[in-house]
Amino acid sequence: MTMSIEISTPVQRDRDQITRQAADATIKLAELQKAYASSPEHKLARDRDRLAELQSDPYHLNRLVAGSAAARAEEQALRSNIAVIESQLESTRQDAALRGEKIDLPALIETTREGVLPQREMLTAVTDLRDLGLNDACIDEAINGARNPPAIIAAAKERLEARLSDAEWVRKLAAGDRATRRELTLLNIVLNSTPSE
Image (spheres, helix red, strand yellow):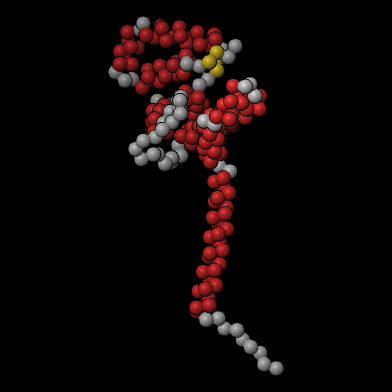
């Protein structure tokens, strides 16, 4: 009985390695494509494209004019999805800025939607608020807004009026005194809050 020993040649080993690498790359590509397809950014782009398509489709527009509840519901569902995803993405962006994470900024121009601070300005605002000694909860209220009882808002307004009539306080503010700037910032956060009652 003869035993055969299989010896692979360097060429065969290289070919096998390349085949394994190609299979691994194909699997990785499929994973990346699946992750991209389910990403909020892709879903947002897809929903915006679909909404634009509907708004320029004469058939859809005729259905709307005719009072079609289904056409109205389809458009409203897209608008709702877009609003939810935009809110989630903005929240993620703000959380990253508050955590001080390194964020890749656009090289030159950044476009945003109505009411959204560009990333560069948001990072600058967070840094400035931190430099004043504000904690993350105050910074979050400054960026996202807060809800306060009307009595608190009224008290902050009275305090600001009293401070602005104090010549020494105004002088310190004009001179850039950190504590005075911090107090003004905190008062403004409260004054810009939404009444909770």
